[in-house]
Length: 470
Image (cartoon, rainbow, N blue to C red):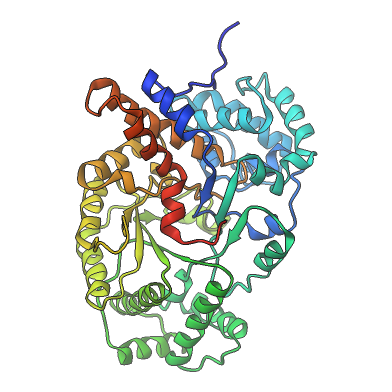
């Protein structure tokens, strides 16, 4: 009988890689410190009605592949029945060979449902029925999935105006997986879009119970929310930026830009940059005061297709890698915080592989001996969260820093079907070290290499992030 496509030694090319994975990586728990899982789904222990709901609903990775395969938009974001959408995906899967989707698809079918069969049009109905039968069980509810994949803790991504009611429900539920909020204040920067900014400020005023008539009150409300996230166990912030901001104004200028935006006057590009620079400094100081970890996701060019943006809205699969210069502003931003003794633990995520070595060397400028790996070059992100680009990231980090202090993988996903991404990463990680052991570039010592691999899978992140996990 032929070996199944996803087998025990999938992606593991050598004996050393196989031993590293099976002995040191495979059984480690998961600390998913950056994801976009909906807290309400965890709070209500969502049951998924069918394979479409858990697997294709909102998955713009799959939508991009389907569109490229000539599938009509109605089967991606339209209102055709769920099985018809799934069938359109099944017809697309054979055309995704050499795309990471092909690996992820079959790894997920195997790990969630024990299904070894390759997905295509001929197998679609069998797989749909078998998966749906299992989805009706508690084992594949939201809570069941977190237990199944040994998710010790996860951090959702939350707007400062969120009341975190779902997190309160989760905390009181007795769920073994700890769920923490992550402070994502991107909308606080939107003075160039007053039609979006002002309703958001009004929501901030309501949730903080602070009347916001002037800039000082705006900052007080943001600080109150930051404090509240900390009370709720949050220890991380996150920012999705084209590039870092480092054109620092005084408070009076930031206040004037804010006031104009509140009157409906859109900030100019220069004013937007200066306002954002002011806020990002304050956010960094708050994070440092509380011992938080700041995450900077740099370089996505979002909503490139304006026709589809108007039809479908953002986050529907029309984003790509940007090409902004990253080094100068990032260095100035980190340096300004460091000068003020207010540089928090920081993770830099890069989306343009051309910048891998720039970021891998940048982190070395601000390591200060206070925390091992205080400034991290984060794992491959979005278009770079696949085998080749994850290897690029780890090679750059290895060559320019200490991969032994790397805090490893996260899902960065909205889907409960994404936990095999950690397995995929661990196999790539084991292969990387195993190849070096086989070639003689590392000692043939599992006592040396094994604990490094194991720590990257979980323990480094656990020590670094300071989350109340145990």
